[in-house]
Amino acid sequence: MDLFIVSAFDSIYYLTGAGFEPLERPFFLLVRPDKPSVLLVPKLDHEHMKKARGISEENIRESIAVILKTDPGERLGVPDFGAGLGRFLFEPNNAATHTRIQDAIATALARWERRVKVESVDVVAHAAEAESALATITYRLIATDARERISLSVPLGVG
Image 1: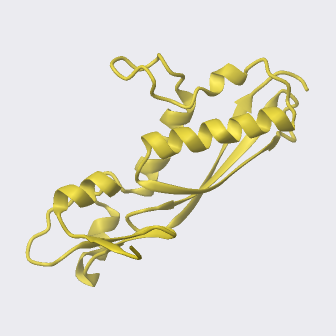
Image 2 (image 1 turned 45 degrees about the vertical axis):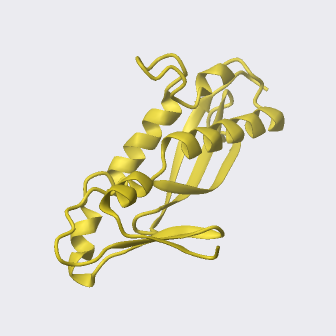
């Protein structure tokens, strides 16, 4: 299958987190196996969709920060929620640890933040903090196909 077209409100919400009230105009989500999904909306509703519940860039950045800063077991009722980056606190600041951090971030975001498609996770030793790594995550918003990037300092040991 090259393309799957989703038009049901509940399915679009499930796949993107975009909450909206479709009235008389059609909305479609194009899902392709080899490219990021694209939400097609009428031009008249484009600005409205940017503000739709759950898809603003700020809302998604906050959600990503919560996921990355939460260790499994912290969230009541969802014991496996979070990236678990705290487990790296006393690990050496080296390439092997950086690779494990990349995997933890990519896995957590794929599981807990379905409104984005992670394009890359880069982890390097933090230039200004010897006991930290700097993780830079590049992702696309599924609902708008906008590319975003955030960085996060991950405390480690000296390596």
